[in-house]
Length: 156
Image (cartoon, rainbow, N blue to C red; front, side, top):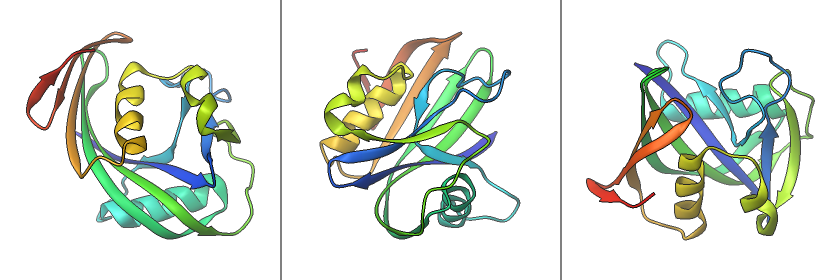
């Protein structure tokens, strides 16, 4: 099973988003996502978060919060446990990344971006400042077929 991190970095009323357009065989190709990536051997969620944000953005996080765990179940990609964070403190300057194109997106424009259906659910929880949560998202192909929040089925 794959362990990953994802972080929504906030600056005022904007979020730093990554448009995944640079790799041809990327399951996120064409989508807008937060920044993050796969755990390396022996890393904690926080260590992975800090390393991945620095590698993908050039930023060093100084203030962040662990928001939840998302369990992705897919008939095509296997199971992934994603550790979700938000951050609103950082130093450094944005750098280019081989993963895609980084842009600061106003919160009011986030819903219009091409995103996974499940990402919209957990981003809504982040915006509503929900307490730490567990979210299970089940996909068939690219389609979200089931969502379970803190053990309770939710409508999708």
